[in-house]
Length: 364
Ligand SMILES: Cc1ncc(COP(=O)(O)O)c(C=O)c1O
Image (cartoon, rainbow, N blue to C red; front, side):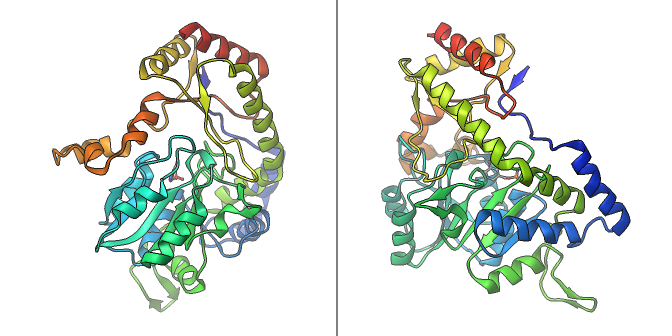
């Protein structure tokens, strides 16, 4: 089976070197030497200050919402992975959905502005497939209405917008280093926050709120990254540039082979991109589903990311409301119905892409 992605695994000997370090330190978690080293190296690589590592991206998001004391309603996109919407609901917040742009697939600033109400406190925008959001417009809206602006940058490792690091925008960004991501620490995540008081709070929050042996200053949680995860990150960081370069070549190959077909591609607005996904947009849902079935029948497993929209989750259905209608999610509905993410990962070979493309043409 050719899956939509395949985790990057580093050179085993390199990982073993880090394991030896863990054994000699006899220190497995709790802000260990390797976690601290990875935080420093990521700050350098990503070009930002204050990287706070966490055990996964979902907790990074939840901690950020808590540390910033976000309350009430948060305007967000329904075209995302479950974690974005779930984190809001888990934190007792009300997600208010805004439509997306049909070319970039990112939240539409005009739709965001229309949704602002008395209870709105924040915008949670997602750089979908690593493609930067409408940064300037969202910043202007956040300033005008005094809202917090948080980016879910789970897909956007190493991306730049207007030649600036993607995580340097907004009040905070969260990253995911899940096994399926461009850069992985097996499971893992990070927060990059602007305000140093928030950074201090996040560090306390990820470790039960413990400030010292005798002081617990807030009701924190366990969101710590461990040394084995950090070791994986340190290894993978060495090869991530090569990995992104391979992805770029594959992405461009897909585009070349599929140009002339009825599929279209996401409009990328990054000044530096990471080619984390290979989304293709079909003209109709029927075409998309035919291509999906054709690929599955031939041992290839693309994914309908992000279908269904998060507003279609069962827990929202209980309310009996038609949320697509309520929030005017016309573009999001259209894109979710017609999108398909094709396999892309550094070791995917060109001949497999040839087969995938032939199956897509066959489906037409
Ligand atoms: C958009 C988005 N947000 C958040 C997350 C959550 O990250 P994690 O899986 O590290 O908890 C993911 C993970 O896949 C994601 O795709």
